[in-house]
Amino acid sequence: MVHLSWILVGILALVLFINYMGVNGLLPILSRVNLITIVLLVLVELVGFVLYGTTWYVLIRSAGHQIKFSMCQMVTFASVFISFLTSSGFILESMRVVLGSREARMHTGESASTVILHRVVYIITVLVSTVTAMLALSIRGRIPNAEALQVDVASGALLIVIIVGVFVSLSPRFIHTLQSIASSIIRPIMGHVQRLQKHEASWTVERFLTEYENTFRLLLLNRCDMLLAFLSSIGDWSCSIILLWGVLATLGHVASIWIVIITMAVGEMVEIIPIPVPGMIGLYETSLTATLITFGVPAPISASAAILLRLVTSVFDIPATGYAAYRYGYRVLMKDFS
Picture 1 (cartoon, helix red, strand yellow):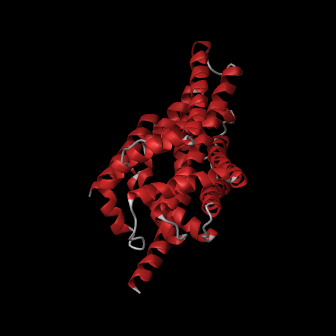
Picture 2 (tube, one colour; picture 1 turned 60 degrees about the vertical axis):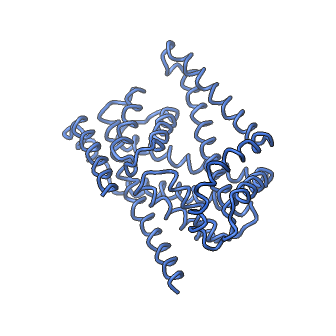
């Protein structure tokens, strides 16, 4: 009932958004889209999803473990479907930790290290591209002079945060301090995790943290694999950018790629807000529309693009990830039963 209530909240937000933007103004614009365009955009979404799972696959193999490429994709798709229902990135990553540990025969700390590093790689990719876009718009005069300095300062601050964050994360002193803090936080829930991880009865907080740290360092030392992971992550993020750019072009507006990057980055930030609205429906569309309007894209085009983007991703995301969750869940259920 709680999940259903939040779904209704999301639907209500979307209805209010469409009503505010004006149904009569949006329908003529959306009617320009043909089926072939939808198919092409869905294919772009598919490529992005596969690259997302590929990044994690590269990290698992780099950690010295074996997992089938198809199984890695299945686990990723199934976890994404669960996150759609709960709208929680924590649930998504927790699912991947547990299922990845099961399928790749990794310890929990090792699995958590691959999942967290995957998230770090993706965040760095998004931040670097966003900073580049902000600087490019500032240099080209697309941002008012009064705000250009603020944008430059924000971009510089983001770059410093990225560099300092990577440096600090490799510091042994920081790791030791983090171990003490994490141990005090994780210890109370150790019993619950032990019940979930039936195949790993010897699980302890200290072992988890040791395996996490050792695997994290091992992954960072594999330069070729890290480069491959970054390239795969860049490809995944690029598909998201191409998707919005393609949606706008379909509606008759060719937007600057820098504007599209910043808009998608805003959407990413909205999606991590800890509100259990599935897929952040309604809120995501509103944020994209507001950002596009800020950069001069006409309001009807902005709103139509946000709605069409939701339709395109839903056409692929829900059926594909739902099927993966069903197939994987059914297989695991039958295995436990047998």
